[in-house]
Image 1 (tube, helix red, strand yellow):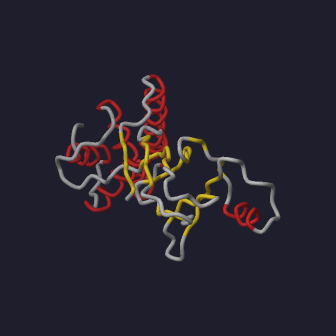
Image 2: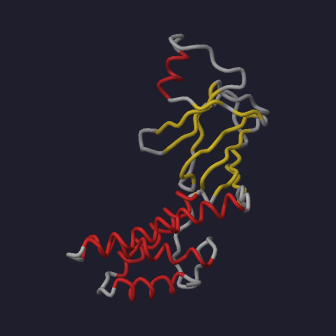
Image 3: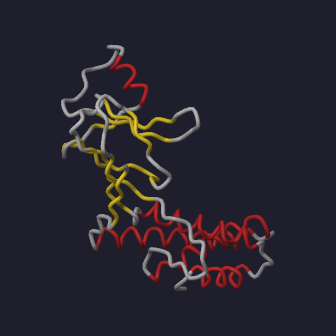
Amino acid sequence: MRTFDDLRLFVDEFADLDLDENDRDARINEGYAELCIRSEWSLARKEFGPVAQGVELYALGDDVARIRSVRRNGRLLQEISEDTRDAIVSGQAVVTPTDGCYYISSDENAVRQLGLYPAPQRDDTISARIVRRPSPMLDATDVPDVPYEFRGAIAAYAASKVYAYSEDDPQLADRANEEFEVGVRRLAQARRKFNRSGPFLIKQM
């Protein structure tokens, strides 16, 4: 299975069901994202900038599935909750670490934001190590960014979801789901073995 279209054909044959094409494609892309995120195969470094002096919140973007760490001018920041940040500001919590903290917030439209406390200075550089959410496959010739031998796990995920809603035999869904879980574990092991630290550099402007 080299392309998105190959995955479609495989799922059609694997599930042996009359699938809605849009639902099938959505399940394949969902499996692709889950595989990359849970195995942390899609590690990346994201730069936020240019930062504005005194501005504490920066949009994360849809490509960020999870944050592993944040650095300000190369120094590692401590992760805190937004409630802890509020307690620090109000003087009800312990003193902020010397290099600062970061937290995840959401605005009124549920857009996730990276919060930095204290707020950056004009010449600060901010970068984060993230688990990147892969872009959905849209064209038939699109190729998932995982090694060839792990692409079957994407199809297994899609099939497990289809079976869960379409079959009376839960064992079919369980077997397909287990194949996906094995793929997640093996891909995570492959990442650690080759010390894959993320080939992506994303610049937030």
